[in-house]
Image 1 (spheres, rainbow, N blue to C red):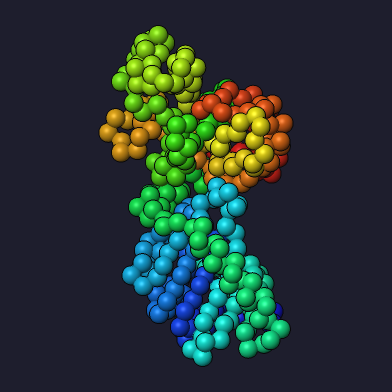
Image 2 (cartoon, rainbow, N blue to C red):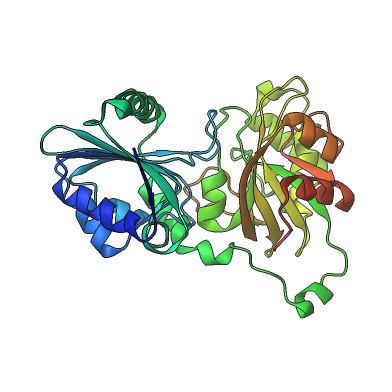
Length: 348
């Protein structure tokens, strides 16, 4: 076992990659420079698992590996938690295994600039073999739970990332919005459980579902909207609740602040995924041309959070034992309590 720090990490990694017969790599952040990307692309067998954080991870560089590599990804809302590991398993030409475990991501900064610390293990050392076996078993389990990334969607997120990465309001913009209201918005379809967070990011919007109703909710009365909901979803019961939620979304104001999160029922014990904060920047629109089935949208600037809090902490901060509906009113104090629990200031 060897302790490795700067400036040696990048040099050692490149040397190992250039002579490897197989590489298994799990990493949170993947945005390598050209030398590292070339070395990865030239590996005879490469298996790469990354976190689906495409505000940082470069899908265009992942695409360059597809001809020779197996590329998989783990969503930030994975039940086992967000992938934050940095593990490389190299099979050398003589079949020995060399493993690097530590803090360094597959970025130029991680390998050549930051103050990182890693441990290198070698199967030639009998003392390292048990740990290496445990690491390869861990990687196999991670790979089995990962999925093929949607690189087209990832490119949309990556290309628009500057629109939602900690974009602060100017003093003039703040003065123009005297009273922002606060909301919580779910990202999942109630009927299928499908998560739409990546579509929020890709289009820089917040959105709600009920895609099958035959009217524009902004142009009809409450009763007309209820009739349309009942016609589209006859098995859903009383349509008045759904109508109220849609009308709340229609009524969002420019400058309103939205907590984007995964909902939770009252008896849930699972951690709650806090995806991000958003500031509404556009009027309500019924986007009938969208290929994404959630067609009711508002343009928004999004601040990515991607953190988990226990359900009890979220429920206590928001004063809500459950968060099952699509949209909820929040007091500013409730929103700020949750932001304090996250340790993340509002930056939109």
